[in-house]
Each structure stands twice: as structure tokens, then as C-alpha cells.
Image 1 (tube, helix red, strand yellow):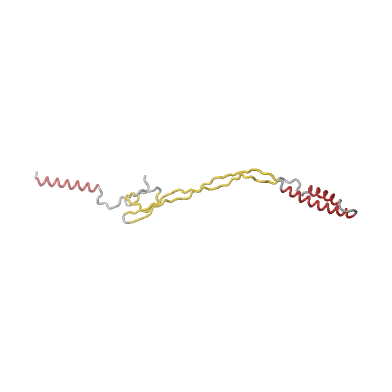
Image 2: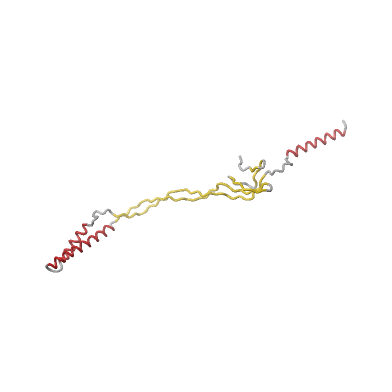
Length: 177
């Protein structure tokens, strides 16, 4: 075999091997493999959770009225007023004083019974409940500003990215499967 032929075969084999190695490294592929993350802003929403709050409260009630027209107070007042009126004067003057005393006593007795009935109360403890809302913030995603080559863009992601986002065939890979 000729020395030049062997040398040519060795050089040719080396060139083919180097070409294959360079092809496997994607040296000529100019597409970026990652997008650089420039900024990450969490996106949150307010969650309102209802709950019941109950408290015991003292409640004042008016006792039931047995004599709504206050007849008892009027009658007792009229009798007392009539008796007191009959102690004044004599003759027909005494009669007029008795009638006037009875009328004034009846009115006074009615008003006294009304006051007594209005202040005749009792108290109970009642549980009063109301719905209140607790608020909390929940992160639902992230707005991510990135640079891919010479261009910048924004995308919403479910999870917070690191410093770089993988790119396959010119597209961001936002979900890791």
C-alpha cells in the first residue's frame, strides 16, 4: 500500500469523525436552549372564608300585662281620690270635692299603673350569631418577564421559575411533565 493512500485514509477518517462529533454537539444550531428570567411577580387572589361568631347577650323583656287598660289603677286611684276629696268642705262643696278627688285620683292611678307595668321587666341570656369573613391571600400563579434571544416577553406560569426557562424548538417549556 502506498504511504500517501494510508495517510489520506487516516486524515479522511479523522475529518469524518470530527464532523460527526461537531454535528452531535449542535455547534451550528443557533437557537437558544434557555430563556433568561428577568422578573417574577406573584399573582394572588383574596380568599374570603365565612365563619359563625356567636355571643351571649343579656336581653331585657317586659313582663306580660294582665290589665292592658289599667282599670285596677284607675279604680283604686278614684276611690282614694274620692275619699281624700270627701275630707274637704261641707255640703254640696264636699260633693264637688269628692267628685273632683275621684277624677284626679283615677287619672293618677292610671298613670302610676302604666309606669309600674312599663318597668316590670325580666332578663334572659340569648345567643346571637352572625357570619363574619376571614380574608387571606393565595398565590395562583406568577407573571414572568423573560428574554429569549433579542426579544422580551411575559408569560403566566403556575409555578415560580428559576433563573432560566427551557426552550424546545423555539417555544418556552412552562410545564414540567
